[in-house]
Image (cartoon, rainbow, N blue to C red; front, side, top):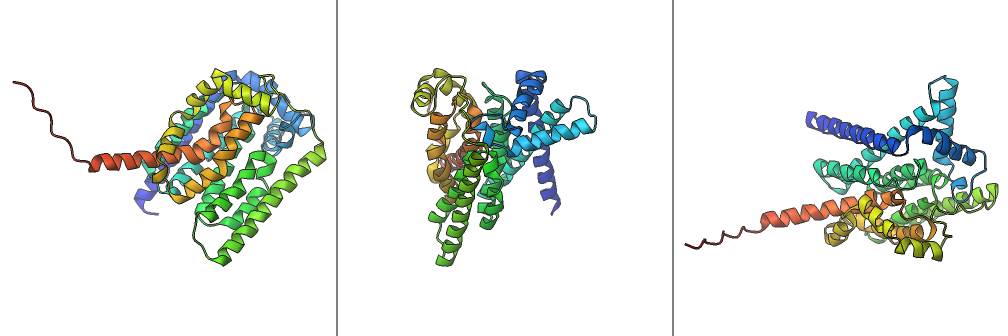
Length: 338
């Protein structure tokens, strides 16, 4: 790697570490570490011991890592093992998400400075998506899983989606969108029939794994009582109407996403083809499902489309507008009156 490349890499890693420390400090002080060490730790133990409700009971991957880390720190005699484990895991989660986001943006074609601006926007959203929620480790793992899937597809390593889908459904049901990132990518590309066949096989295996794991978890633990959101509304129509009509939904969404969705959609023509494919695979299902089944003011739920779609889409639009403005001739100043 040339010297300039090493300096760029070190700058990116330093920025990712700095943003990780900043966001973790903000997230940890939002509710206070003692709260996380009691309430959140109790929720983690309920999941591990099979005593939680729908949908938390079936999201085992990250909760198992958290539980194992806490027990390891207890065995090592570390002070405040729960709080220490929570801080370290969240630091690693955020650092990984920021690093993968830069790699994803660079592969899409954005410059290093644009990619760093992108993760700064993501950090802003992370710090404004804390309403009515705990650390929700599985949500932040979701960021890395989707970014990892995007990178694999951009590098044409589609077979690697299969081992990814051995993990992702254990984390969140939202991973069901990942195979469709592959499918819509195929539909938007021009490849030969042999490559089509291979893609459909990988797509079918990934969908089959998702169905088997999601259904298998419900078979093992049974259909658990649904955890009603703090809004007190039950899923589908009551919760959908509540989310659409409560003013805080839109205030918190704007605080988290900002102008990125509007800027991105207004810049559709500037997007590279793979980003358009990822949009169709994720956004049209993500928002209706979360508005109907979740408490939408908990806007951390929308960080995945933000980092995967809206931020890079808006950055491509800003680049295009900047180029257009630079190419336009400057108008001469209007003459002053004597």
